[in-house]
Length: 153
Image (tube, rainbow, N blue to C red; front, side, top):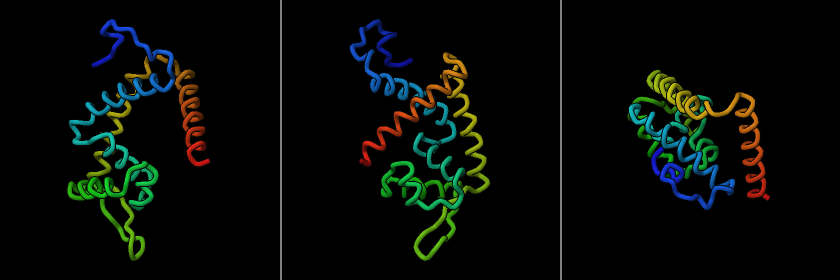
């Protein structure tokens, strides 16, 4: 892996820090996934938007923005670019809002993107058992929930 201090033979003073280990693992997985998505002309953010629209046909941009934690001003150009590529369509939901849906080309891209996501997951899942993966997902979900509750409270 690129820029991994363990491969460079350097001592890692942050080895015992949970947040640091989570961040390093996330960066390594994201980097690998980003490389896999390049041939599809997708970024990690674009992947998130595409797959959220796939899972939530008719979702409004404001809902999508909130769910993904992306500012509306940053999401609008991405949605416009997807529309220009023929990947999404916009259907009026009321006088001011449009629901987003995938076109046939968008569904095809989502299918190919899911294939890359599965490849990425498989690459990083080989070092843990099915039970350990389930436990890790549960622990991470609990950690995320506690952090989100602390932010709200």
